[in-house]
Image 1 (tube, rainbow, N blue to C red):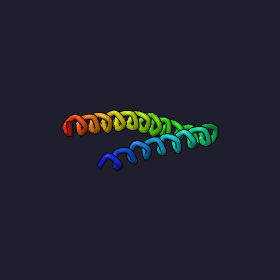
Image 2 (tube, one colour; image 1 turned 30 degrees about the vertical axis):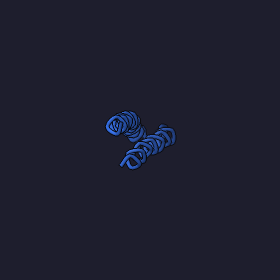
Image 3 (cartoon, rainbow, N blue to C red; image 1 turned 120 degrees about the vertical axis):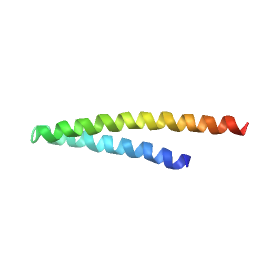
Image 4 (cartoon, helix red, strand yellow; image 1 turned 60 degrees about the vertical axis):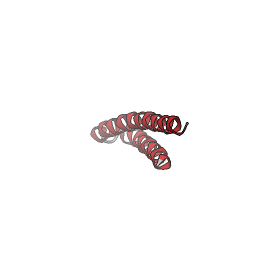
Length: 67
């Protein structure tokens, strides 16, 4: 279970990096889609930190229950 949570964290980072790439490539061509990818990048980075915090709390709770 914990491995799946870790992979989903990095999936959000991959989406954020892809969005940042699209922002830089589309900025001068299509500004409307660049704004959409700014939103995706912000949400993905936020979700990365949210999921990471959630996973660490889950691991700590599991460790406390084993002791």
